Figure 1: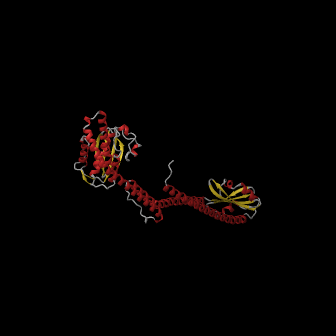
Figure 2 (figure 1 turned 60 degrees about the vertical axis):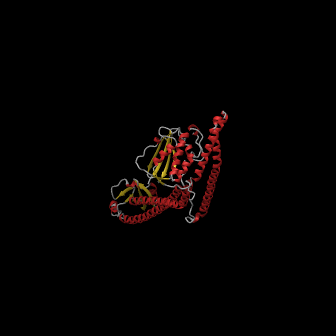
Figure 3 (figure 1 turned 135 degrees about the vertical axis):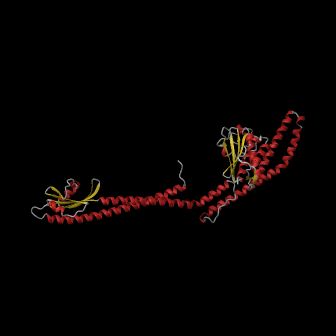
Length: 451
């Protein structure tokens, strides 16, 4: 299971904390309000029952009192029901035979023993308060207060407090999101700078004044980049110096080997074969030195100028000894790209050379544009490139595991690396895809190539 990100965890923590706090406060507020309302209602009911008891006691003082008339003289409102138990019978002011069922048996026994009490019950799902008072050994008064309005008020209060808790939780999540955005802002700067360094921009640095609390991180990061830039520059100079120093002896060796190669007809078979191998390896060595020099210069910015990409591509294709018809015609005449001519020439030459050596030969060269980005695509008819190799095939001196199946191993291992470096100099990239119908498709994207 994928672990949630830092921002998600912080936002969830803020939301959970706010929800727990708001829910606790809502519960406490609800219980305090509910207790206060019920206690106040009970006190008011007890006072009303005591008042009614005095009226009933006075009304029953006689030989043959009219019990129902006495009960009807009471002002009970619409929520109260008054019941009188006298000499074993029940009396109500209205015909309500089921009202007596709402009086709990325990409360009846308490009142019959001369006491008085109150009990909360539910009658047909409606909460009610029943109060019993003993008026005489044979007479007891019971009053039932139905709490429909109070129950609805408490329900409304519960909904309101629940919505408030949810709103507080949402506010907590928003606060967590804002806090993480503020806290992670310096880390985003570090990530952006690191991405720039990964893309080859060794001038990326962090501003120490942006976040004083992260001064140590900023200083360490900038120091690391400085050290990396110095090491990179040393490596570049070393490669350039070594390549330059090797050129002179290589030229001497190439000239000497060329003499041997021209006189191979006068040599015995083994010596002629050895001379041919020496000439091939010296040529490969010269190509390697040239590629190393080019790689050492590839960090320089691209020198853009208007170029006819299709004309340039046809010239490169013909220079490689291939059919210029490989270049697909332009969709529009007169299209010009703002690119570094020398770099684009080498991109095309290296991709064509790679297709010849490892891909069974090129089958198409396309130059198109998408939203201001120029695309250079070279298709071959080889076995393609394995997905695992696509991540490393553009590194220096790396050949894919399928290279042996795609062709000979006489390359320098720097051709595709140079393609990637020239694409990066334009702010672009190179990727390898599957060609429909089989084979590989190398695509180079050059942002800003199309005005």
